[in-house]
Length: 249
Image (cartoon, one colour):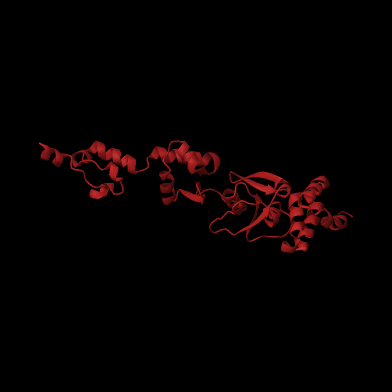
């Protein structure tokens, strides 16, 4: 009797049937049971993403323009479904734990979005902020992003980042939040960007800072109060004063 039972309930390894290669060993069950159509259907459901999960994930993506692995898990969907959607070309991974449709429109500021996703607490600054505001003729080949001193610098595959570190008021002053491609992107205001350029004049060139100041003043892109506050935050009031006087004269 025991011998018959052992023959009946003999366990097989997970890869004993090529249909179920990759099923965890703990799911391996006796041959007569997994040969049944009912159990085969169950294991198919376990091993393959159902259409309902796919539709739910795509609904989450379309609602915000992207979806995170945490949002998928909170919705009760296994995050392995995201991997399959990436594999079949439906989604693309834009940062760790964040995905978007491969067919989504890409704006001219897509690099800023990728940087913001990688560093949500960072702020687009310097030449990248200047280009975003449409001031000057600079077309930076890298994305300038400011992070608070002490934080780990972000890394993005296939995107050159120029990371600068600010602290205190120099980091907090003049932050604007813009919606780009369905994502929150923090960018420094025009006034703060001008102050940053004068502070980094030895790095970006004084002519770049002066040209930006002249164009922004001509187009009324900042107020004197905003510029004064930004200059004090960056401690460049005395540096900027002679250039500002020549521009507004």
